[in-house]
Length: 152
Image 1 (cartoon, rainbow, N blue to C red):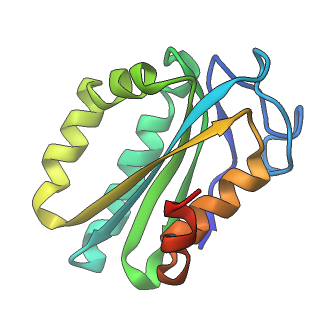
Image 2 (cartoon, rainbow, N blue to C red):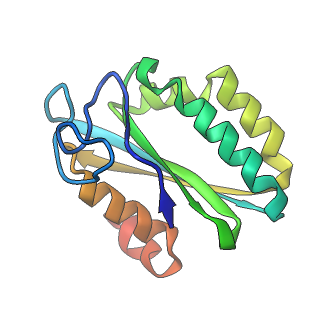
């Protein structure tokens, strides 16, 4: 699995306090508290669609510094499995819903809806721990880890 660097939102900082490429533990910029983590997993029907999906994902990531309630996010890809997605961290469900309704996000979903299969899960945390969030997200993305994370 290849993963992008951390993209902080206005409600968070780099997970290690400054070095955005590291996924170490840290706290979100506005103190601790409950967080919602959305893990998405898109499996493309063809390899040909992956570059376009990746470009659109990185373009959408440019909005992150301006999204209310966005703590931050990572993009990920498993090219040989034709899979890609994101791990995004939010201050709450309302913030996540605002992103889902963003016209740019709706356009991507409409464009690729019939080109593969989309799965997602919401996980809840009492504070920001980048290492734990990534470990849980990666476990959910791998078939043998889904049952363990679903009960978390």
